[in-house]
Length: 326
Image (cartoon, rainbow, N blue to C red; front, side, top):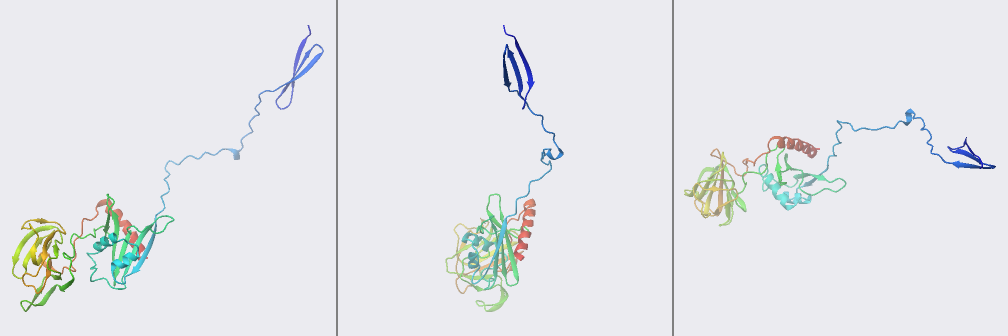
């Protein structure tokens, strides 16, 4: 039987060489072995770096929205100037009401007055002609500002810089009239009784039968006839205000003493009863029972902002006001 012998010899690249001899025949077999070369040493420059999030790190605040300021010169009316700035008719109507307590749009607006607005502009886009964030109306040497606030329901409302509502609790005019036929005056010559005396209200000329509205919510103090006034309605409004509507042709159906009326409710119709020389509404506004000029008296606003909402609003309004002035 032939003899068998084997010898392991070192090879290259991790291989072992086996020599086998069977009798006179010798065979060399190359066998692969698993071999992992040792990992190279890690130097200081090769140490992997792991960045852990900082526990107290705050995300970067989003960029402030871009704003654009636009201005227009009044040529004829406030509405015309507002339309050139892209303000829609509905917003023009609410802005007219917002300015009503400080600006009489019929009497105070003059050619050359200016209207300035601030719009929020989407990033990378043109101005978004939605409601403006702020509006400034400059009449002569006076400037009047209103600022947009959205209530929790998303409805737009307008406030002064300090958070007071600009929506008046009173309407400036309780009737659609054609002209002021007689102004408020502490002394005027009365064309009916032919003597000098005060005229405690304004006469607003309008066709007979034109509806007359309550200027504010209130309680009917008197409805009936009085000397001079003719058919008249007297309302107790939120203190210290009261209002008088005289020379009516008739009263609204069902109106009686003690009844509660809401702002804008029809309470009667224009006439020329009493001491009147033509169809008109004689309208009075009294503060603590003292007659004031209805066209210029300061009218109370709606509910103001409160608490934190007011503080945040005032801070933003201050920044917008500075932009309007820059």
